[in-house]
Length: 606
Image (cartoon, rainbow, N blue to C red; front, side):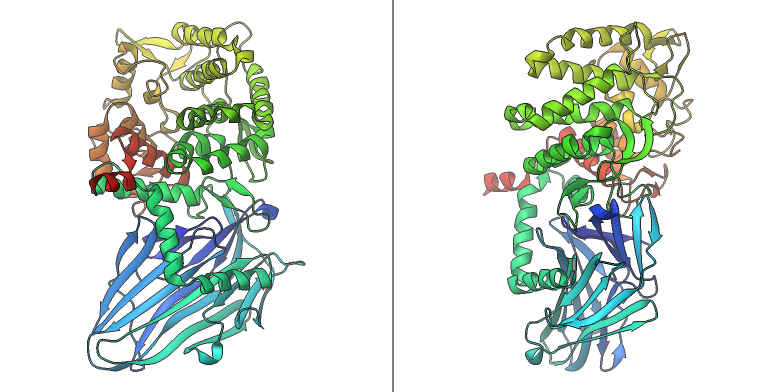
């Protein structure tokens, strides 16, 4: 099953079916639940499904042709006999909800049409990596707030409410609603019956609002209704157009922007209950570790793309990390409220906030942020934890988990220590009180040279990890690759040691090189196929032509970044809907091919 996705700060629609335009589920972030809540239908009776009848005969919606307006808003067209059908799902920026508009144009003889949306709220799930049902009864009741009906979930107090609206004047509107509760499911239908003459068009538009309880949900929908579909569409298209990028190649532009917006809206969002901005690996339950926070994922992968598109949101990301998430910085994964989810120290994650901070400063020129109390306090906490990971005599820092989150083989990873070197240098550069860290950074560089460079086939190469007693390994991981050492400025792409390292991990006798395959990118045991992150790494390490060819062979997750792809077909093999990876892919394409704001390019042409 292929899916389209869309969403905004509050609502995510991760499962819009390509086959029939049905929406299987929606999800939203909830601070009180420490993660994500999903409203779901069933495969046979999804949460929302458009339908059409012509002269009392059901006409299946099939043969849909899809496109994305501004690379984000999914819309379809279909020719069904003499009828042309168009559908558009819109989650307007800044709104707590979304709309679904259906249009039908009659190209034949006059006919009686019945069109609308059927709904089925079958199950509610709580998602943090795993999705589990919330076994609480649903409620359904008419409401004067929306002249329609409201559905909600109340374990005791309200958890959330969901409400449609299509008019403020039901007595003057041809659309009708029908709703019932059957056992533990809520079924509803919003439809319009009309005679459509030759050449005429009819449409139905329904808005769906989310809120903490009845009034908030109903009025959220009403606000969008009052604004009007065209105005909400224009506002959202304008917002997207301001942030679209171009590298001068329509195929690459599509991949870049789809993944940029997916990372923006599915790698973070606002919680329904507290309206706090939070970061997550993905707001899609299709990603296997969704709705939780990783320093590395959000800050090393997603952050650079968000910074390109919207520096204000990037600043919001930093505030969240340096406040909500800082007390457990560097620990494997956390809930969205900052409390510990999975234990285990990761050195790359400890460095990630520092790297993101200075990336922001150098991109925006905003050095004032460096003196914010929450920044300086956070840096002190990072440095305090970093000192505990240093070898007593040698300037190398250990980790417990590798960038895949898997257990290390040896404690001192070359890539991780390059991140330490990079972070210490930046701190010394921007903070006079940390000037002594320049000397420590140089000691780290020297220690990497003395202990992390080994010999293979008579030539020097970077080891993946060492234990300082003579043991080392040849290995690489796309989430934290040796390919990126020039990207972080540790060496040049002409460095002989680095070039030999790349040669070793790319040649056919290295088990995860996939050197003889159409998509010859690096994998690892965590996912033994070429990684999308490896394509990104290649784009950033001087191999844009080959990486671009590999990318052209990738179907991904219907155009959206996944963890790994089949080395022959390019189909997703693991990690669908990987929002933070999507950001890194977008950033890597933009960087490798000299991306610019699309609107600026268009203005220059005009």
